[in-house]
Every structure is written in structure tokens, then in C-alpha cells.
Image (cartoon, one colour):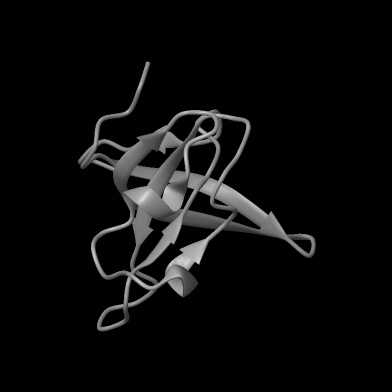
Length: 89
């Protein structure tokens, strides 16, 4: 089942042996082969995309604000690892 645009989601991301929980808002569903750069908001620099622009697997484009008063960054987690959050979470 596809998670709708605007839903709050979370997933665990790992790098260098450290797992981090990330949470954000779904901007778009990216089917396999789709270029994430085409789904970024207008005038968003490429440098704010965290992840590869194209993948052979389904993904989501998720907007994450690392801290208050910081610019948003955009991640492309695999659709299989993203979990939709309820308002109670």
C-alpha cells in the first residue's frame, strides 16, 4: 500500500555502523527508475538531496528538517523501510 503525499513517516538509516532514526514528510512516491531531482520543490539546490537521484527500486522523497530554523533536506529511502506514523506517535 502506497503512503500518501503529506504523511509523516520514519525509517532507520545507517552509515558507518551508526543507525539513526529519521522522520519527515512524504513529498512524492518515486517508482523504480524515477529521477528524484524532478520531484524536488522548485529552486531547490541539488545539494539538498541526500541519496542517489535514480534507483532500480521504489522509494519515497521525504522532506526532513534537521533542526528548527535549519533548511530542509530531502532523503530517498526505499519504500520497503518507510513506516507511516500516526498523530499519536
